[in-house]
Amino acid sequence: MLAAVVPGTALAAQERGELGIAVGSTVAPLVVEDLDGNPADLGKYVGQRPVVLEFWASWCENCAALQPRMDAAHDAWGDQVDFVAIAVAVNQTPRRVRRHIEKEPMPFPVLWDDGGGAVRAFLAPATSYVVVLDAAGTVTYTGIGPDQDIDAAVRTALD
Image 1 (cartoon, one colour):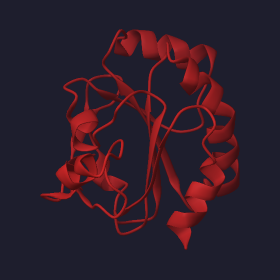
Image 2 (image 1 turned 30 degrees about the vertical axis):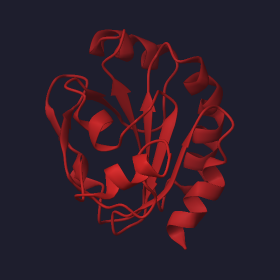
Image 3 (image 1 turned 30 degrees about the horizontal axis):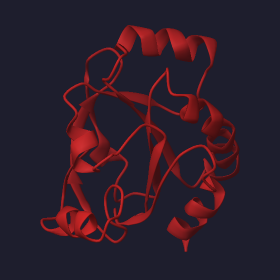
Image 4 (image 1 turned 180 degrees about the horizontal axis):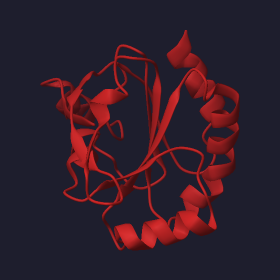
């Protein structure tokens, strides 16, 4: 998984008043976990093709409202773009996440950010935060909330 931001870019984003990691930033490899506690390297997704990362929680109303847009984008672009949900370790457990996705399946992997490394690396301000990386691992889009145009965000990563 992705681990760290290239030095200086995160601070620059904060100084400009942006939420989350700055567009144009690149990331270094980072490892989180799968829902069984096994290491999951986000680096396997970066540098191959574009990737959409959503910082997600089972209790997040904005995430639930965003899910149809994520599903539609996955249906349209899933053969060209990887989609990954990163479950934050706030008020939920891997067991609760597994139960949730058994009832409401997601068409892409859900990983577990137990130590908060991914949240810190991407400066995730809240759940429903989406980061899109192009095939080189450069951030092309960030957004938050239920009304994001995920389809347009994916198209920017493919251009």
